[in-house]
Image (cartoon, rainbow, N blue to C red; front, side):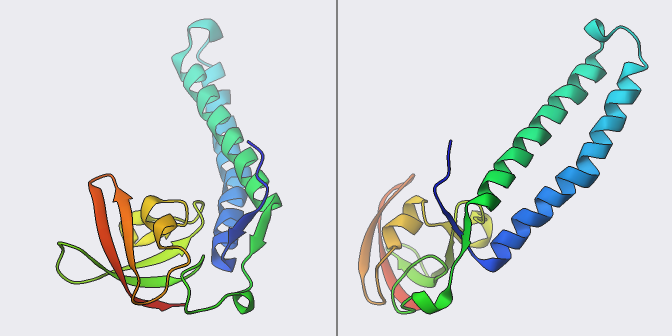
Length: 158
């Protein structure tokens, strides 16, 4: 899957770079040691520890390739090119959800930065994509896994 451009916050790009560095330095070394230890257990054709270590190595190398591709195509969002009143990538949005008490606050980020359990949602998620390009006062219909909900945009900030 070729990435055309991945828009990230400066913090998001640094997070990806830190993860890549950790995988290349620490995790590669750890898995190489596991493979060496497993080789010492004898016949590789019947060695489950070796197979598990090689599988883990494959996962690490796949993730390294993914991160390198994301970083290669990353563009840090320039805040000066954004209208702060309109919901876009990087916006902090306060919404009122129909049928629920109180409000919810979301930060809209790239899929690589999303952490939904902490209110940091992707611009590609159902809620994030539905809110994009709206302003305070707008009512937005959102198709969620729990059905269609009306979200009222209370506030938009950066």
